[in-house]
Image (tube, rainbow, N blue to C red):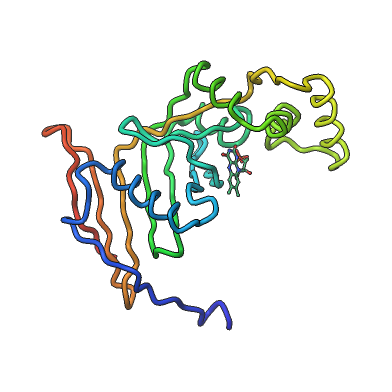
Length: 212
Ligand SMILES: Cc1cc2nc3c(=O)[nH]c(=O)nc-3n(C[C@H](O)[C@H](O)[C@H](O)COP(=O)(O)O)c2cc1C
């Protein structure tokens, strides 16, 4: 079928204000738990959009590594495009999509870097091969060939057979949300969209419905 005419009907569920948790991170946690129970691979994959100081945007998938009332935590290379964007313009939006549940979540906020202790703890919890790969890769730089990359990997494997010091370039980030939107696909594209906006006056999340 052509792209032009390809359509899915979203009939999985619906979303009312009364269905939502009082805090948005609990609501996202519930949707993540449901996706995990369904054995959706990479159920915690999300797309992070950032922009540089001129407004040029970039977006890429990441794995969410922590979620709580403080925000959403992810890891990557400080010298990558995302790392450079964040250091120049520390704000972003994170987007989740679970096709099986006809659900989307978007979360906007400022992004801060995690302290070295958190970064070290997470890096050291990763499989050794992943640690070697991170050490060997200058993420988002050009390289002449796959062979050169594998040679770099082998050098780090030989140098650090059991333990890889956490590379300085490896960073952790927390997006501290001020806006969340939970989207539940509905029949005829009359979707449910409910947002949480932080209200400074009441120090509470204000929930409002958006038009689809
Ligand atoms: C499912 C999935 C999960 C990913 N998880 C991460 C991650 O947690 N951290 C990361 O730096 N890159 C991750 N990547 C790779 C990024 O999408 C991207 O290629 C890389 O971070 C460089 O992006 P940048 O140059 O825009 O910074 C993942 C890619 C996919 C498809």
